[in-house]
Amino acid sequence: MAWISAASISVALALLWLWYGQVESGWLVKWQLENGKIFQGSNSELTALVVKEIVTSLGEIIWRRLAPTKAGIASSERLNAAGNPRQMTPEELWGWRMVLAIGGGLVIGIAGGELLLGCIGGYLCSRLPLVWLSLALGRREAAIRRSLPSVLDLLVICTGAGLTFDAAINIIVEKSPPDPLIDEFNQVLHHMRMGDSRQAALRRMADRCPQPDVRSVAATLIQADQLGTSISSTLLLLAEQIRITQAHRAEARANQAPVKMLFPLLFFIFPSLLLILFGPVFLGGSF
Image (cartoon, rainbow, N blue to C red):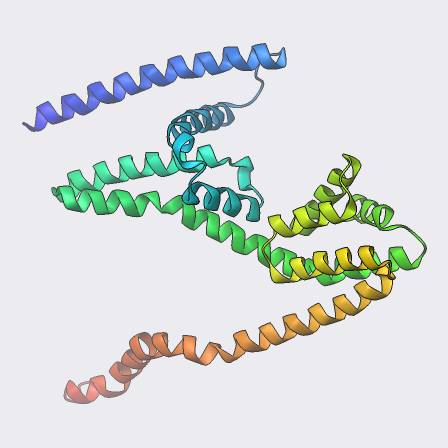
C-alpha cells in the first residue's frame, strides 16, 4: 500500500507541474500582449506573479459572494487600514485563505489520521493571512504614531511661512523619506488634485486610518477649514497634544511591564533558580 500511495502522490505532483507550466505560459503571453514587451524578471519573480494570479483567481470565486456581506466589508476595511501591503486585494486575501485552509486541512488530516483534526487544522491555517494582516496593520500604526508629531511640526513651519495647506503638503511629500503617513498625505494631495475638496480628501484619510490621532488631525483640519481659522496655530496645539497623549500611552505600557513579566518569572525563571539553589541539597550534597 505504501508504494501505491507514493505513486499516487507522484502522479498528482506531475499533473500539478504540467498544469502550472500551462498557466505560466499563458501568463507570459498575456503580459506580452498587455505591455508590448517580453517579461524581463527573474524566475522567482515570475513564479511569485503567476502564483499571485492563480490565488487571486481562486479568491474571486469566494469574493463574488462575500463582497456585499459583513465579512467582505471588514476584509476590505482591514486591507485599507493596513495600507494594502504587497498590493494585496481582497480577492487575493480570500484566495490565500482558501489555499491554506485546503492545504493545511489535508496535511494535518493525513498526518493525524482524523477528519475532525483536519477540519480544525484547516480553519486555523485559514486564519494565518488575517494574522499576517494584523501584524502589518500594527507596524503601520506604530510608524504613523512615530512620525505624526514631526510631520505636524513641518506643516506648522510651512504654513507659518506663508504657504497654503496644499503647497505645504506638497513640499512635505516631496522632501520626506517614504513613510506610511507620508503616503497618506500623498493620497490626500492626489484626491485634491483630482477635484475633491480639502474636507473630502481629509475625510478619506480618516476613513483609511482608524487610528485616533490621525482621525483627530483630520477632524481638526476640517473644522479649521470650515471656520476659517489659522491652520498653523491649530496644528501647533494639536502636535503638542499628540505628544502628551503618546507620553501617557508610553507610561501606561511601562506600568503594564511588571504584570507581563509575572508569567515568565513564575514558569521559567523561578523554577530554574530553585533548581540551582536546592538541587545539590536534594542530591545529597554531591556537588
